[in-house]
Every structure is written in C-alpha cells, then in structure tokens.
Image (cartoon, rainbow, N blue to C red; front, top):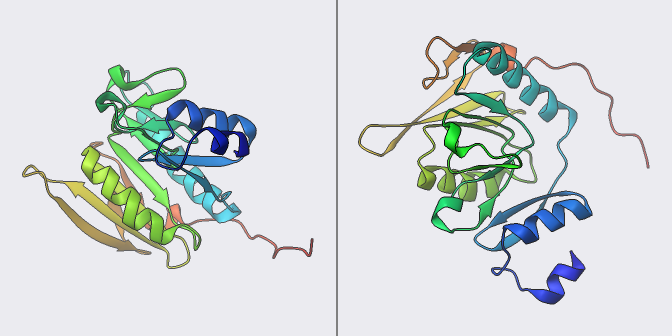
Length: 198
C-alpha cells in the first residue's frame, strides 16, 4: 500500500490499484477512487455466510444462468467507467454477460452483507447506497449479535421497500422463486472460544 500511496492520492485509485493491494495481502474495497482496508471476518460471520451460501447453492444447482459467489470481486459500475469494487459476503448473479474470470461486471441480482462492529456504519451508509444506486434487485444486511436480517427489495417504481426479520420468521428470496430460509437456520453457528491472549 505504501508504494501505491507514493503514486496516487485517495480518490484517484482505479481497479488495477485495488487488485495490486489485494495481491500484497489483506482485504480491500475500492469506492469512488478510495482504497479502504477491510477487517477479516470472524467465525460467526463465516458460518452465517456459509449457511446462506449452502442454501443458495443447493437451490441453484442445475440453473444455467444463476451463480452464487463468496469472496469474489463485484465491480458494480464498471460498465459506466465508475471505479467501485469489493467482495460482498454472498451474492447471486443471473446475467451471464456480467460473469468474467476474476470479477463480476455490473450489479448482482442479490447481495448479502454481514455486519460487524467495525463496519456497520460504513456498510449501512455507503454500501447500501451504492447497491441501491446500482439497482441491485434484493439486498440483505445481517446483524449477527441482534440476530436480525433487514431485507430491501427493488420495487417496480424504482424505490426500495425494507423489512426486518427475526428468529422465528421465514424469509423469502424474492428474486428466486420457491426459496425460503428459516431465519433460525441462517443464525445456526457452532460454539467458539474466546480470544486467547496474544
């Protein structure tokens, strides 16, 4: 990252710089030419993402158009020349023309972001706005500690409606006919130990 900073200032970075930062290590996102380091996900985060991915993968098996992805680059506005890139926790793309070897070019159809204390404000302020601007058809923000999922659905008039789901609720993925999750199943995780002193 230090080598990149010598060449450019925040606000001037492009996708190639984002790729170079990832190759140096760590997790990054690129928004409006600004590179931002991302925290590593914890065990709960990984298990929740895995639970959703497993359900989506089983539902989409044999679907020739749709694919579910994790830890993969989404370039939401690349087709407009606008440099934004990050890796949603889980996402679905059903447009084959958006699929490239190393990234998705354009908006996914469905996106899941799992919040952590270090990213909640940023994700709800920046990422939600960018997903809406990109016209992502369905967006979930998951709060693991509260065990809630807030789902946003793109309406025909171009606006979004939102609803929060809790343990005991069933939550449909509206863009994928017939797929409904039990919220309790999404939050099913194993026991983990507290951090050891380092």
